[in-house]
Amino acid sequence: MSVLVYTENWDGKFKKLSLELVSYASSLAKMVGGSVTALSIGKVEQDELSALGAYGATNVLSVDDAPGGLDNQLYTSIITAAMEMTGSKVLVLAHNNTGKAIAPRLSVRLKAGLATGVTALPESVDPLVVPKKVFSGKAFAKVKILTDSAILTLAQNSFELTETGGSASIEAFDPGVDVAGVRTSIRDVQKQEGKLLLSDAEVVISGGRGMKSTDNWGPIEELAEVLGGATACSRPVSDEGWRPHEEHTGQTGKIIAPNLYMAFGISGAIQHLAGVSSSKCIVAVNTDKDAPIFEAADYGIVGDALKVLPELVTEIKAAKAQ
Amino acid sequence: MRILVCISNVPDTTTKVKFSNDNTAFDDSGVQWIINPWDELALTRTMELKEDASNPVSNVTVVTVGPAGAEPTLRKALAIGADDAIRVDAESGDAHFVAAQLASVVNDGEYDMIFCGIESSDYNGSAVGGMLSEMLDIPSVSAVSSLRIENGEAVITRDIDGGKEEVSVPTPFVGVVQKGIAKEPRIAAMRGIMMARKKPLQVVPAIEAEPLIHYQEYVMPEPKAPCKMIEADQVKELVNLLQNEAKVL
Image 1: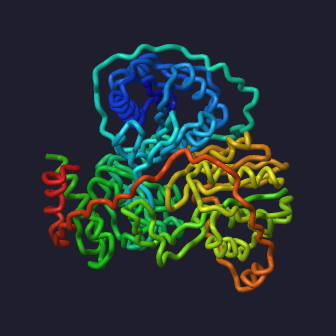
Image 2: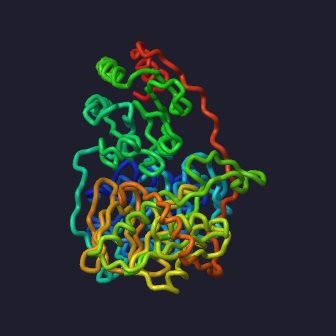
């Protein structure tokens, strides 16, 4: 039973996320006894494509003349054509904006059960049963796929990269779809140039109402820079307009799972914790010793974030310099 | 222009979740039900569109798939301003079952814009909106963070992983909305609540539809170790622990 994985590219480059998907698909293919084909849509150099082989893809299908910008119906048709051509029964995508947009359409088109935000390999393959988070991280569910084919979207940062050292053969793929039917038209694109995406960051430095004012974000940004991380905030902060809504981390904002999450002046309302509780290590600094953030945190300091932050920046710089 | 806003009836986001029947069912005893937060934002933006006289929005319908117990949530949506409501009478099933019910509702009415929240706060599926659009064979735009009407088309800002795009899409289409679409959810005023009692709420039977997945069992996360507290004047010690114990620096 072969596995197809859709590896999205960003300006012709794959990200760690793409490699996580191939690693996952490769482990999954071993369980079901098949091989992994990666599908790439858009212009990507051969070297970049063949690098997917190192994570377990044996074959890469490349559709390099697809129109720019995501049209959900067009992408659904392209991926459907690739599923049919390879005879794959399992499709793996990222649980990111693109995956969320097209996986449900593919589920209907392919009559394949869809499990979204999957966090680990299946616990059984016949029937296919996969774990995912529900109730915004308050519990896990085991989802049984009732159909012959399955579509899984994998939660970011939930699967370790596994290098298998293989090489992939690359094949140009013509999905035979008609672009004349595309009805969404892209008027403008604004990319976050040179800025690490919150969802990709291994380290996230976050501020809450305890930061008192938008003017106090300097040390948060500095700390993020020192650690090569991204900045985030709690909901009241983005509601106040102190920070852009893209930085809002929590139940209705971004759900993240970095290696290190540092929360300054965030009390840790249950809705905030829903967005960050998958972080591998949580550090909290808050003046209120009874704040719920300390129940979720691994390390805590009861104190004023505005005082602790500059000192922390200095100490971390010193530690990094050694 | 007629707009349909799909509403999911979900447990209040502060609910402590419990399961029953050997962890195979969600235990809803004592649960307060609310409009799914993203659906509430979609409804808020829809009301803003309708109230702006330059937009040709004539009617706003809200729909949910659920048992009679979901009606207070629909009444709340009417109190916020929707003109009428539809409840598909079913115990809610998987996303595919729900999308099939909604597709049937859309086919029985005439809607130019259909909005769904990007996920529901209970099963976090992010699936119903996309499935519905595919069943109807109409365009979908996901991760919508702003929307306006221009020359009968929708002009939408959507988040992509790494930026934003402005796209335009002709009607009919499904917009899958996220945070940003409206600033804050609208709260029903007393007048709205009074008026909502008299607004039409139609109950329609469910159609036959296959579920594609089954939630077999629920598991609570492992309890985590207690937080290690460090004195505020020992920042150096925190850095030491992060570097040598947690190994995250």
